[in-house]
View 1 (cartoon, rainbow, N blue to C red):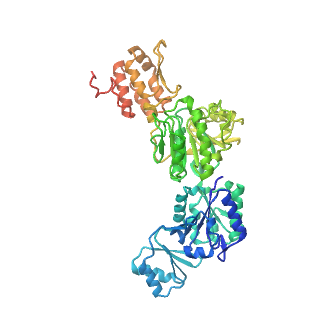
View 2: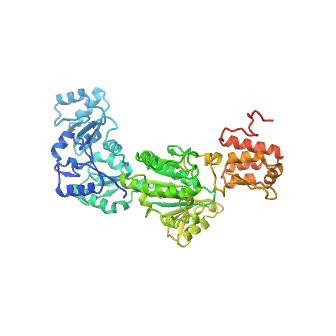
Length: 579
């Protein structure tokens, strides 16, 4: 289910002549029984609203006074969301005979043509106030207060997200909160300008249109409504933008190590977080530990508990990294098998998280896993699966794919492997690049389509330093570790990270060090397994030096680029025993 909150305007939308029809009330009751939160968002003053709306208890919260007041019908408590009306403004309008004149806890309300008097009074008194119109009504509010800000306050009280809201209205003052919602709808009697700007135009007038919207929501048909303004930018293909919808996406990102999977994912993640979608990143190898604007749970010494994760995620403003670097490889599938249904349950209850991003997916859902506890990507909102080995991912997980992005050299081969693993024909790749660049551009394949299209990625604005914590002190997988073997393969010393590499380099004999040095093994490992081309180039320049000098200088380069644990080695210039 995509929408967990229905936010309705009152006059002209829910109500006609101030009265809500019985059929509309029944539609709202059905939604409430289905677990949908109901919000009333109105320009009316609270006392006036309570007089005309006997069904007020139907609503979980009421935003009154055009965003100025929040009311809890269950507790019968009202909370002003801004400063009260300036007494001098009220007194002047009363003296000048502005009628009708309503004075709420935040709002001053009158009607045209008294807006002329209102504007003159605001100017003469030197006040900072805004005037909002609504079909002849004139509302005076503090600057920045509108139905959108009131909606945000209500959602904050409910631990709900704007991306879980469908809103419906009919007039000028509804623009703000319809735009703030994931989907904004207009009833048939709405002003033409509002109809033009909204995402969904309903056929019914007033409450009949709201009942129509409720039926779409309950049936699930509303989930399929396209809202292009929320589609997430990936890049461009010629003059055309390449975008992903924000819901029901099952995206697989695959390619060789160091090919650009993290570049694609970082760009996507940056835009999702900036748009206030709640993201959960399951990070088996500590790659996202330093990513800005994310709450990181776990470290090399502590695996986050499931309840700890869920408690943080109840606040939709918190996107979370679940760092599993401290968990053994063999234990990761079991941890994820426990986590995944809990995330799906949280989304079913609250409407978030919105995106689940799985790095090293083959660590979490390996090929041997025959079943997974969700049926489609929509169970967790949208899903991104990142892997260097698509054939090592569970077939049940691959069935969640709606599209795939291949990156790096050989995108056609990568997509062919993905298609084969999922039982589809390999797509033909239509390039977006000039000859010679084809192999380096990513390609997007809608699963089942005969073609995949290359595109130019729009990169993230902020570059992330990739893998530094994992490479410095974490535990790299066996296929990414470095092995000191020597010329006769008499050794088998595994460097699980850069810290271990420096320690082992200190202890191996000159013959072993020189053997790997002369073959270019060190720079090749850093380039191909760590994906650090800059450091690899620097190390390659040292691979013709003598054994003693090259050891120290390689260690210095690593220490300069990566933050290693504060344990002295032979190569530490501050070590007391340094020769």
